[in-house]
Image (cartoon, rainbow, N blue to C red; front, side, top):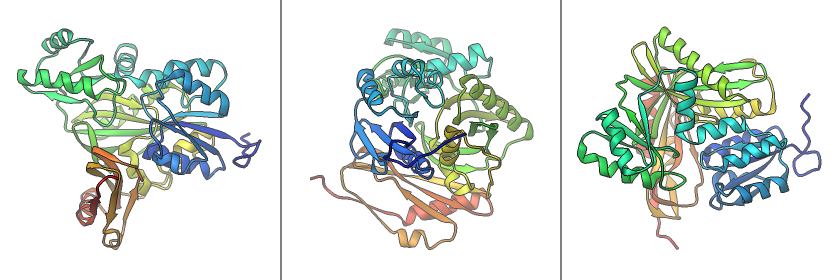
Length: 397
């Protein structure tokens, strides 16, 4: 039986977030609804989750020694990775010593880089994936492209939100793609994956929650990306019954192999009735922010329940919904939003502003949410809302 004390007391349950972005912020809020004491970690100060957590630390989470020092000092009941770039070998050691890593240290280790999860999916579980090769240097990279063929997709083995990702459409793109991959990896320059270009009708994220009562898949989420970075998502994505059943099978298979409790974002390509596995994240997914308006228990609420071992008897889906990322371009520590009065005057529209402290180049600063009778109408709503939003970039200093 779960027992929960009050935060900041000797009987508190503690959760330590390794990563404090907008997704971590929502997880922190949901855990706090149950009285969980939340400690937030990230590589920069005043990250979104830090603004709502009970305590926070700034560190390079690839620094295993520093990460261990904080964890041994805090003694959390739950260690919750929210980003890819973490000293996963340290988490594996800590799990062996009795710490509870969500969903498991194995899942964090395998999904931290694309090589681990791709080999698990294709070579151990036999799931359908794109063809792929790995390369450590430029010569190996060119050899991998020769084997896979053009067009192909290039990604660092460890990155997120599309960083370092590109498509090679001709030989003239090879050098540029190599440099993009080397500059975009979360751990710096290094190994890349070259994938065969998949001909698909659409992409989905199938959110899958492993909890005390079993495994539950949510309504499929369709999404649009720009250079691998999510821009819009909608739910439910229409699918044929056959494709949906295959997608559910793939999601249950890969999450079952990873184990543990929590929400997983399973990404797949769909071509007619054919389903191809792409990636999986053992944590809430950015495209899943649409669930903050589409259902009674968002992906963050489900993650919190699953982590705590609480039951999830039913998830009420409200209907066609959409989300649109608010992406800010520039270089400033002063971003000001206005126009919310007009945005929120339309029924069925919501907005979340993440509260990030600064932007360099471009950064996701918020999300617009809408629900309506159809997906098309919901998407049109978030587009109208986006057009009404005013963003002011003030000079630094």
